[in-house]
Image 1 (spheres, rainbow, N blue to C red):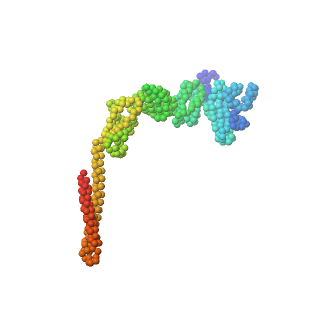
Image 2 (cartoon, rainbow, N blue to C red):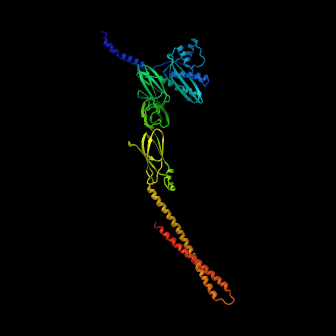
Image 3 (cartoon, rainbow, N blue to C red):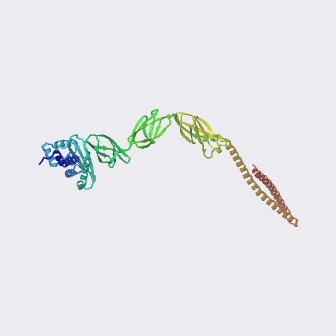
Length: 507
């Protein structure tokens, strides 16, 4: 029988070679198991005996995750006793825990505390690197309920959180990064690539610099982190309102800058940090110069620069001198009607125009301006030169009534006079008619009474009172004459007043 050739042996062993390589790959890709010792959790607001029971259960829960190789409590106590290390109670201070970890020859120490605030139990745990003294990972867990629930619900969750932050799926040479934002549920982005929500572990990152961003609603946070090969790092990122920066300049310098109309940023040149992202209104103010307003879009984590050239000028107000307008006419009472709806227009030789109703308040560029004020057809147009400088300026404009207004007011007065004439003459004519009617009736009555007395006198016999009859007759005649005269005067007066009344309508 011939010996097999080497090639034949390799062919036969090939499946076993692949199996060994596969097992080795699986072994190297297995998650790393952390060699830890758990110090008793410090009791805060609960009994130390209860804290001791919770600490033992915590060790068990850490082992159940499969991520930790936990030193048994009895073994810890034996080693510390042999090393003559005196420990009084629980040790949750880093210096104490690191010293214990070195005596126990473990890679990491787990320390923490269990406490109660109101009805809520608070569980805290930190993983310390014994070699470097750094806090590698930390986790918190709150439980609202009875203390028994801490054992059955709170501790398993706390252990799983620690296991999650130590888990790595990275290939050799890659790094792991555990990202924890100040507010859970924040979206995590590494180098512009979305990775998930915080808290989370990002595996398989290459060594070097990375930009880590977290965002939740309007909250944002960013850190730059440098990773080494096979590194496992934890970053805590505080969330704040998304913001950027502003660099603001003015010519000349020294302008006050307001953000969104109310928040002072300071005097130029300046740099304003933590400006909320979005569109903002900026206003530059400086004595002797016109205010400058602009809008800027602030991008998250970027700096926007803006420079403004200040323009010399001042503030002008224009009003109406209504008292002066009254004095400007001989009929002061006629100028006290409704307010004047005047309109102002400012122009320069360069063609710049500013206009608006009076009262007018506006900023003007320094230089010469022509002010024109119009009050409508009843007022003359007022013109006045304005030399605008850096100081505030006020102009009170006196408007004079126009010829059209004066003519119209003359007509109004004439019509008012004629109205009074017609009223008085009409009333007088009516009175004259009444007097005339009364006087005519009185004259007729007196005449009739005199005729009767005359007839009675003719029929009187001897012994009659002839003197009394004569006296009555003379009295009736007198009354007739007086009434007739009054009636004549009333008739003449009525005729005159009626004539004046009728003639007034001709004017």
